[in-house]
Length: 499
Ligand code: BES
Ligand code: MN
Ligand code: ZN
Image (cartoon, rainbow, N blue to C red; front, top):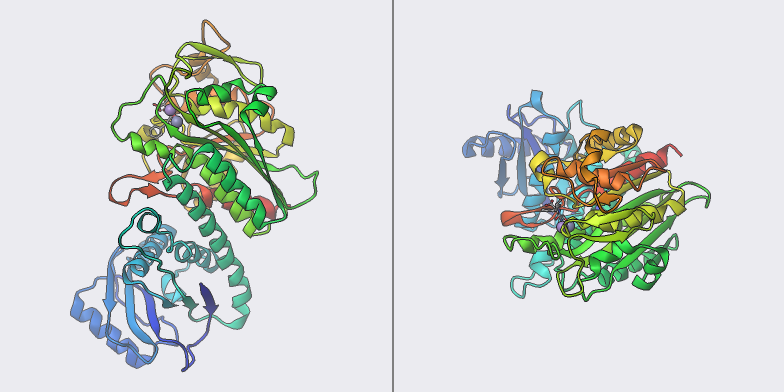
């Protein structure tokens, strides 16, 4: 996709579609110079005829040619000017990307100014438009394993109107940030949407390895079951015992600065399918458990974004990949295993397997002397009860880190919300037969899961993101969301700044 920041449309420009934001007062006077008085008149007349009210989530397509360059004009409602904010901006840009997909727009003249207000930063706006437009060609479901109605739609060119040459260099930076994030999201969505008969732990390891082919700064190391056994990762290995697919520990290193600079370490839950194991799940919607590797997918997506942005810092991604299956060789409820940390665990429920793979990965990564560790996991159904499908849960042993993540969440609009990781919850994990039980009692399941992880993260600054509610959509737009790649990339960008 080509992109361009232009002040005015030259007469020999290609024909395309103009995109304008309109508030509910329906004023159309602050538009770019490219849309002259005659065109404005046409637009105003069309608005009047249509009954378009400029409300949020409202759109109007004026198919009649407006001026010499615009074959069509699309108006997008922004709602009441006084209530306009970043959330509404993002809603409006999402509406724009929907229009792109349904109308197959190829050459676009986007009037950025018409979407702005005093409380919206232009750079931020360009980054967000870029995330959307660079994401429109994600059409996994339509293209990959559907044999009919194949589509290979892409935007050819987007022209951002009313910018002078001085603006353009800076804005390009923000556009490219958005593009890197969009590409990271696309990796995460693709891996999430792939079914478990294709996306196995081995597939994930090979996919991660392809990142190292794209950048010299990335190296990937895959540990086999035998090597994990030698390191004492019995707890991780216990999860894959029932599966034919071998478990993998995947380490992706991005070396963007001095070797001695402490890295940010991301740890992803990569359960390529979660049947529950011997504590088997009910069959209803069990297919969605192909998404139980979305934490891992977000680690791969974020490392892809970091490498595309060529950031001058060190980031390590570690993925604990396994398939949780029942079989004659599967772990039984009540089995006791010794973790890499030497703490013993009584596996009372084999469906609480995410924490079992993560705990050994969290012990393993101490060797990287991390600045911060963030694990990302579709860990508990309970987080859906608490936060629905809007916010991911965050629990942490470092309040400063939590606050930084929340700040990045506000900028990226990839929402997270804190739950308390208090000592009062820890006794839920008491066991008569081992150091720790792998489940608590009935209540506060997201917190007791994080309490379990906290027993393995005492030596470093750590935050846990429970993305069980946010990693994929159900219903008619069923599919992976790519969250929280945007949050994590924003967080890493902020850290890169302070270097
Ligand atoms: N992968 C699931 C969590 C999950 C459930 C994600 C539903 C999305 C939707 C996880 O491995 C799991 O099964 N957790 C159990 C834990 C319980 C046994 C303590 C849960 O949440 O029910
Ligand atoms: Mn489970
Ligand atoms: Zn799971």
